[in-house]
Length: 363
Image (tube, rainbow, N blue to C red; front, side):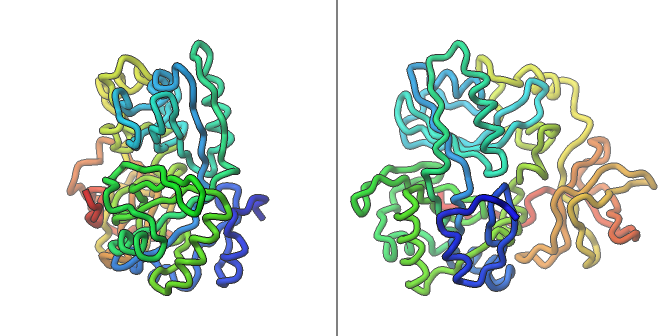
């Protein structure tokens, strides 16, 4: 079993959640039924315990210059309260992690990283501070975090949690004083629906959870439907669609890599990939039948293995058997015929866009 537990562990157990190891933590994969939880987020409101995510604070005179150096997106001249999505890269263009950068103040940035990569990211960040007047502080153990997601999330935030959030725009955040505590409320999400995140003390997060459960208006949701939700709208999961070997260009996330910046770690490799082309690419595949492709299954074309499935499901929102896969770029044209080997049998499909279901963010 995992050796870490979030501040809501006892709440999950009390609700009868199925607990599984994830990113070094014991996390709820589902409470009742993944399909029910998935649909609650698509059509109502669901809440996720995401306290396992990592938070690393960067402060100092060179804080902005340093974040620009280690991060692919361009944070220059951004106002406090803005959030950026992007990646940290190895020199060869492979992905150290994908993350969110919160601009807290002129010389203060909060990096929100994936749970499984907290120690790796913290060490990698520290290894690149030479020459910069910055301090890094891994604050992951001090934060609890909730994600309230779905078309009813704004109403739930206001009426149940009494948090004024209607003026927070997409990919922005506010610091608030609530119950005599400083908290962060952001509007991003990982589901394709409108939603909010609350970063606060463990005690505050526990009180919020209890209020949400007592209201009867929110469904507790596990990592199972978090994966089906993000997958349907083409959002990557580190370890599947992004890895130390898979660059953001290969993953189709080049929009978050600003090569017009003066410099960032991995820039030369990214420029080379753009100039020379990539050998492999993450694509969407829609199968003609009902067989379900899973992570690691082989993808073939013309009798040859051309890649592997990174994530696959029968899409709950569309009813279609679909997957994302890392395949040879030569076979990645939309509409190309491919086959996925499932239990020794080849099942026909076609290359599609990675977004199988349209996002519904409030912008």
